[in-house]
Amino acid sequence: MAQDADVIVVGGGLAGLVAATEIADAGKRVIVVDQEGEQSLGGQAFWSFGGLFLVDSPEQRRLGIRDSYDLALQDWMGTAGFDRDDDHWPKRWAEAYVAFAAGEKRDWLRAMGHRIFPVVGWAERGGYDAMGHGNSVPRFHVTWGTGPGIVEPFERRAREAQTNGRLTFRFRHRVDTLMMTNGAVEGISGAVLEPDGVERGKSSSRKVVGDFSLRAPAVIIASGGIGGNHEMVRQNWPKRLGEPPKFMISGVPEHVDGRMMGITEAAGARLINRDRMWHYVEGIRNWNPIWPRHGIRILPGPSSMWFDATGKRLPAPLFPGSDTLGQLHYIMSTGHDYSWFILTQSIIKKEFALSGSEQNPDLTGKSWRMTIKRATNKGAPAPVEAFKQNGADFIVRADLHELVSAMNTLAGNDLLQHDHIKAQIEARDREIANPYVKDAQVMNIHNARRYIGDKLIRTAKPHRILDPDHGPLIAVKLNILTRKTLGGFETDLDSRVFGNNREIIRGLYAAGEAAGFGGGGVHGYRSLEGTFLGGCLFSGRNAGRAAAKAAG
Ligand SMILES: Cc1cc2nc3c(=O)[nH]c(=O)nc-3n(C[C@H](O)[C@H](O)[C@H](O)COP(=O)(O)OP(=O)(O)OC[C@H]3O[C@@H](n4cnc5c(N)ncnc54)[C@H](O)[C@@H]3O)c2cc1C
Image 1 (cartoon, rainbow, N blue to C red):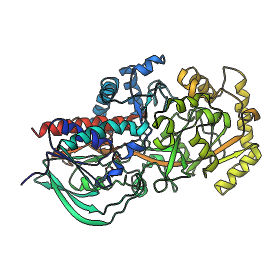
Image 2 (image 1 turned 45 degrees about the vertical axis):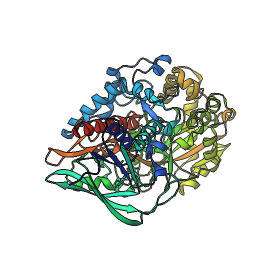
Image 3 (image 1 turned 90 degrees about the vertical axis):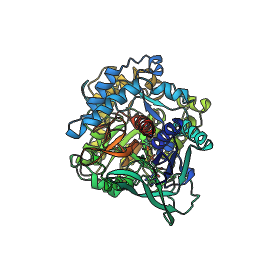
Image 4 (image 1 turned 90 degrees about the horizontal axis):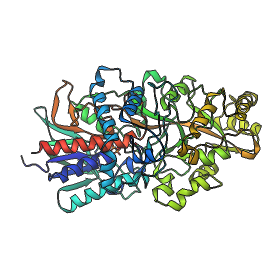
């Protein structure tokens, strides 16, 4: 039967774009299908902060950071905690991925025009021992231009391939079935959705106006994860994290619906580690939402005091920015699905960053003039100030009594006791007078300020929370925000998908979030951050190259 292409890619997000451009560059014909319209090309990556995990980069070296493959691998393995038979391929992917991040990743991107903001961020700092969770050193490299800046080189390459006829886009094509013959893939079929000019990121119409089928000897599944589908998140919620939260907000657009996972499984593909996920605990409801239940993640610096719903300070080392899943585990164990930051104006000004391209107009717009204001401005960046004024989860008061009373009103209960909170803040404040301390969070602040990048733009000078000169006081109600799927389709290093009989399914590949960013779960249980976009780049590239090679 006539083939429509050498390879079909399902999904025009970052992983799909990378795979498709590799195929076209190898001289093969590729079709990219996506259920969304052309305006949403790039998927989640467009909205992302563009943070990339790189190891021993020139940016790190310039800031005096000594990093290496061995140190990064030690951190990755301590963070992943691989402990299952199913972790065979994820572990091999992890070793290969860390080598990619320490090797050709930066130069490969740079050759395509990608650039990096010079101050390297320090995400997921851990706080356990050297073999435990977390980045020993700063490794979060923000793309100059954030999410759009990482999509741009691949979109450009895709458009060139479109012009020379090697790549075809089929937007508003929703895949409903993988067509299989004798255990091998032979194409896809599905529904054509009505055209919809809705703005990027907003939910688009699901009205079906036709059907389609396309044939090719190879299909790459790059359909993203499940974070927009709260039902599916709850169904797969791991028991080790307690009951699934009753209330969650969405860190991803609605098209991250997980539907293609079921369709691919129905064709016999082996989905592993579905109970591993990466959701944030510092989610705030967007006062200016784009997608349903739109939440934004605060990327916090280390100084805010963190309290659970009953007003008890989170135990060490659960400081802001240290251990996302440790925090999620703790918060769910309280029987409530939210927690609180209490901080000062001095802290919000220096330490609050919001994850998302639209929340960082300075970096996204590549404006040095605006970006420099992060270090010199009197107030917080404008999007943070806008949240402070308009965000449903923000409370600003000069006085602690009033702050706590407004926190109880917002939560709709009276769980917080002023005297209890005051005693904990005052105790912490007494530790600030000396450069050496007992309080582990304050110790952590001093440690952060020894890193020039944090001192410049991420960590406020230590001060008393109740010092009115640093006020007003700010409380932020933090919700659980769904984001990433860490499990996915089990693949070998060529991104070829295994079937339930543990044999490779001929012609079937998976990349990006659908493949757990490689192998079915390259992260294991936890992430070092900046590893998701990178996982899409690496697994998309492997899938594209392998599928093109197989096409002969
Ligand atoms: C706000 C935000 C900030 C982030 N910041 C970072 C960061 O700083 N660093 C980092 O590493 N990661 C970050 N991430 C995560 C990262 O962006 C994503 O994990 C990654 O972009 C996923 O890419 P993907 O190609 O696998 O999937 P997606 O981007 O979800 O693309 C999948 C595509 O497949 C299409 N599709 C799905 N099902 C079908 C079907 N049945 N038929 C046809 N088409 C279908 C979808 O419409 C979509 O276009 C962030 C994410 C968000 C949302």
